[in-house]
Image: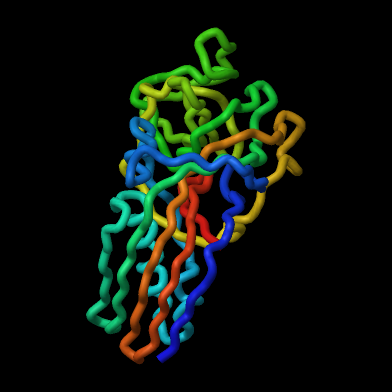
Length: 261
């Protein structure tokens, strides 16, 4: 039997519309045990799927599909499970099983890079959301977070966008399409899409973005964001007798995935 234990690492947001990071010293306590509670009205779920970190901790004896499934279950636990509550997973066909226990949610502030259309203002401090949202009805896109800003576009009812983040101390959300911020929308006019997936991945797996090749109407600048982070303790056992015990920290990325390193 072998046991793998890794150290908790620092996360760098390198996915979706927001790329790169510089960890700041300010870390604040969150108000709820779950991420959904912390975001309040800006609830979201994580998106995407990929081979993940879990398999590396156990080795070749863990089936790839099981590794992916455990990773997704971990992402769900990070999103919805209260601190200290253990989630169990098993596959009777392969004989593998796992336990996943997330810790308390806390907020970490960072400076990251954001790609935006030139006619859209750089975001003030954002509370990262990530994930696909749909317009509840026709809605204006504004150059900045407020009705006093110029209209730079619009969303038709049921049109999908990426909710990048909620402007702190406001009711406005910065939204993006095709990898770029395209404006701000009044928060009550959009809602999470029913179609969401869950992903746990290592930081950097999604690749970085820049304005290169996107034309002269795209600007990349540095903004401050607050993102949800949680620690996770898990164990994995295989039918072959191999096992892994690990504790890591994962933080929400701009596309809604949970990233670790």
